[in-house]
Every structure is written in structure tokens, then in C-alpha cells.
Length: 514
Figure (cartoon, rainbow, N blue to C red):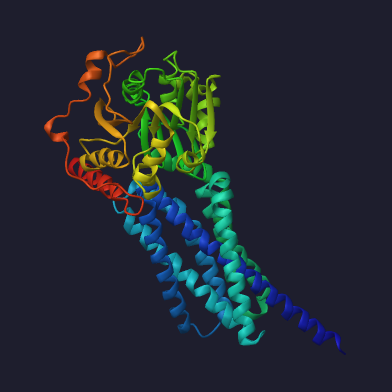
């Protein structure tokens, strides 16, 4: 006679465990969708601080709206919860393909981005209030709230660890959105079966399975979707794509030669990169009397190292680049290693994968010649590499009589940013000699030579250069009126004025050319 109540108690306990597991799962999925949207916006629009701040703000506000709207659902809570899980799974799971498609095909990417973030946030905001109301008869209120919120925060922790350490580098953004959308729908399917007597809607179960099928198909064919979306983003055929915890690396090959893109931003074209790298390296290297020890910061493609190796006086080169995937591609992949003449395989070269900002502080060596070849200061994380703090660390590593050569964006397109870099180097206690060179892919490009004392650049150049001659090298230091110095602020770590200068200059240039 006691078997039926015991059986009923077991079923109720199983249903409760299902719902508590659902809390952890939907919390993990919800934060993954937020991180996916912020990361994609950063990849496609740049300025990661702005993109993540606005995406997080809109997402959290939308969750609040969803939580408020949950009060208007009073009947059939289990069925409503299942419907919400199906919708969250589909909207969140399709976020990556929708956003990539919107960027390549539509002129209103930001509208789609924030509309999608809002829709996802509202749906995610509905989930926890529904679960609390469904579980309210199973636990005392204080116990229920503590259990649900604990699992919610634990799921958020799991997502924040999974996303950078495994999902981005190993699974990829496209497949991750499908996988976690599928997890949301699995919660819906599971709930359909466990609570089938409560909702009594076979059609709802069929809808959940159909949604799961769509997301599984998306996960299976996500590589094809990535290939399609990236073909739409780039003019030439994509020959290699990789994602690391630091950036999205894309290489294309076609009429534009081999081109490297980091987070969608062009870094070089093999048709004319020699102009950029010869101008970056040789005027400064020629200015050093005895450049035995050389340091290269950034430049994981090995092109700057290739140019330095042309000088037989150089005995040892240390290359410090943040991303091991970058140096691996340009060292081990035969097609791309050929572009730098297999420079990263040279016995004179040591590759260190580290954050140059931190590494400079810990390194105690001195170098006769230093090349700084970072991407432009589009974001605050890159902007820190152009601050007085960084340049003071650089000064400490520069040997007496040594010279540093720094890429410094375009003095024509982003004139304020260029002269801000020059003045920041001077504010850090170094002499600065700015110069520029025409690189057809990019237009006029700027550089700065930095040293402890005033600098005279000799005419001596190694044989076999394709662009530089003594006469051209001398002319690089003359600036026409439209690139002449302007009054600017110094770029400090706590203000990052350079990032704003750079953005304003390039935005005007893009707007003027559209």
C-alpha cells in the first residue's frame, strides 16, 4: 500500500532534479550567447571594449525586460517554459550565422546585432522566473532562491571558462552557437518527456525535436557555413582560417596575392608587403653601429625577421608574439613560410609566445635594435602597446647606441594618431624621428625611429632590396604639408586617447570613400 506514494515521491524528485539541471544548463547557454555576440561584434567592428560594453548592457537590460514580462504568464507554465526553451535555442543557436550574414550582406549590421541581442536577452530573462514558479512548491522560498541562483552563477562560471579556453580556439564561433542552442532545446525535449502528463501536447514535443534537428544540422555543416560567410567577406578565395584565444586569422590568395587578415583587418598583401617591411626595418638597422642582438615585438608573420636576417652583422633575433598559432602558421605551413623565406626556422631566431607588454617588464636583456610591429591601435587592448608605460619599458631594453623602429599607422589617413605616437615616444624619454613610405595596399604609412640620443640615418643598405635605395631612404623623412605635425595629447594607459584619434581618422576616411 505504500508503494504508490513512494513511487510518486520518486517521480516528483526526478522532475525537480531535471529542473535544477535545467537551471545550470540554461545559465551556461545564456552567457555563451552573450559572449558570442560580443566577440563577433568585436571581430567585425573592432574596439572590443565598446562592443562588449554595449552588447552586455543591452543583453542585461533585455533580460530584465524578460523577467518583468514573465508576470503576465499565469497558466500552463510547463508548456510555456518548453516553448521558451525552443525559442531560446533557435534564436541563440542561429546567432552566429545570422550576424555573419548580416555583416556581409546587409548595410545595417548594428541594427541586426542589437535586435538579435535584445530578442535573446528577453527570452533568457523569462527562463529563471518560470523555473522558480514551477519549483515553488518543491522547496521553501529561501531554499529555492538560493539553489536556483547558485546554479545560475555556477553555469555562468562554466561558460566564462569554456568560452575562451575551448570553444573559441577548438570549436569555433559558428559551431559553438549551434551546440549551445542545441543544449537549450535538449532541455526542452527532456522537459517534454519528464512532464508529458502535465503539458499533454504531443505537437510541442514534435516541435522540440524539429528544432533540435535544425541545430544539429547546423553544427554538422558549420564548417561549410563558415567557409561561405568568409568567402562573402573577402574579395579573394580563403585558403586558411584559424581561431585562437586572441584573434581570428584568415589568409586569402588570389589577384591580391596572399593576404593576411586579423579579426577582419588586412595586415599585409604579398604583392607589396616588401615595401612596408623594408621601410620598417632597414633605415633603423642601418643606424646601429653593431646590431648583434635584435628584438622583434609582434610581427609573428616573420616578414620583419626576414629583412633583419639580410644583415650579416645580426647574431641573434628574439621574436615575441602573443599568438602561438600565428608563429606556427608562418613557421610550419610551407606555403606561408615561403613568404618570409623560412625566417622563423633560422638558427639565429628564437620565438617567444608572450604578451609583449608583460614580457618587456620581466626581461632583463638589452638589445641593439628593436622592431615594434603591432597591429594598429584599433582597440584598448592594442592601445596599451602605444602608451608611455610601454615605451618606458621599451627604453629600458634598448642598449646604449641602440635604435627602435616602430610601425605607427598612416600619417595621411589618421594624422592625429600618427603624431600622438610620436609625442608619446618623446614623453617616455626617447628621441623620435618620424618617417613614412607609400605602400599601395595601405597608402602612405608611418613609422618612427626611437633612440636614446639624436639620430643620423646613414645611406648604407644591404644588397638585394626591392624598394629602398639610399636616395629613397633619405626622402622618407620629409613630410608634405598634409601630413605635417599637429598638436596632440600624449597617449597614457589611463586615457587611451590614441584609440579615439585612430578611430576618428579611419572613420572619416571610410566615410569619404563610400
